[in-house]
Amino acid sequence: MSEETAILEVRGVSLQFGGVRALSDVTFSVARGDLFAIIGPNGAGKTSMMNCISGRYTPTSGRVVFKGRDVTGLKPNQRAELGIGRTFQNLALFGHMSVLDNIMVGRHHLVKNNFLNGALYWLGGAQKEELDHRRAVEDIIDFLEITHIRKAMAGTLSYGLRKRVELARAIALRPDLILLDEPMAGMNLEEKEDMARFIIDLNEEWGITVIMIEHDMGVVMDISHRVAVLDFGQKIAEGLPAEIMSNPRVKTAYLGEDDDTPAGTDEEVA
Ligand SMILES: Nc1ncnc2c1ncn2[C@@H]1O[C@H](COP(=O)(O)OP(=O)(O)OP(=O)(O)O)[C@@H](O)[C@H]1O
Ligand SMILES: [Mg+2]
View 1 (cartoon, protein in one colour):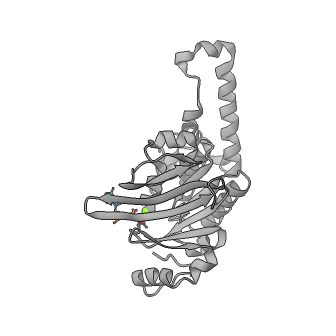
View 2 (tube, rainbow, N blue to C red; view 1 turned 90 degrees about the vertical axis):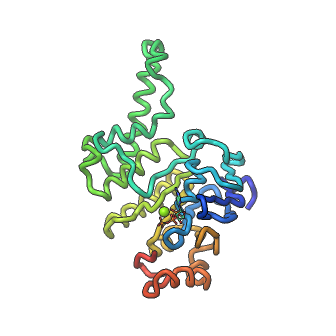
View 3 (tube, rainbow, N blue to C red; view 1 turned 45 degrees about the vertical axis):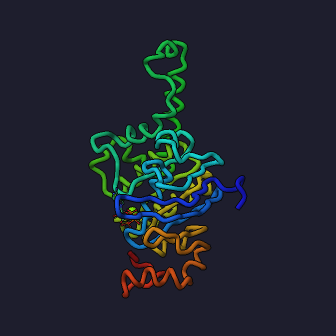
């Protein structure tokens, strides 16, 4: 893949936690506009990989290149400003705040006016900016079909809805690339179908490149364009969903985990 078409390049990334080697020399590229899945058994290093991309962890060795720029040394907020958004495997919402306010938090870095340069307020700058933010947030609320809960406290919502609000907050940053760590974990079938539709739409209609970790192989095979497979911190396969399904190394990685659940079923695999 040429550098122009790749929005993200992970080059030889390794990550060590004391004696644990969470990632070993992992390399892959994600094309602009891709819906890219990272799969693998529990403890394979998937979340660690996301954290190296988002900047939460700094790789022990290797580089992360985003839009042609080496971001390996940048902090998470700096990467967010460049256009990398994310959600977490475990929910990270402010439970005591409304849905609306939780999403507004996502736009925080886009807010230029604050009371330190309040003079602008009197020139109308802050008011206009506030209005623009409100509009952008309302668009997202519309898109994710959460209008009915916009005033509700995030902490009182069902798990599926909270996951959706978390996605809303991540999109509010207007990322070019979004990292989704198990966006459908713990959801029932209907919630999963909704979430799959939202992910496809934000990829196709909003033009956001998606990297998604997901255990449900049915979902991965249905919606992703390309798949990378991690096992014990190493990339053991990468390709089209159908290629991954028939890859013997991938089957072995999963069968080694759980003899009853071969890769490619709709069951939770790992
Ligand atoms: N902060 C940390 N400190 C020490 N070890 C860690 C840390 N984070 C992850 N690890 C270890 O790194 C390895 C990879 O973990 P990681 O969370 O990336 O796996 P995963 O593929 O996301 O698994 P799961 O499917 O269970 O979410 C595991 O052995 C884990 O115990
Ligand atoms: Mg994980």
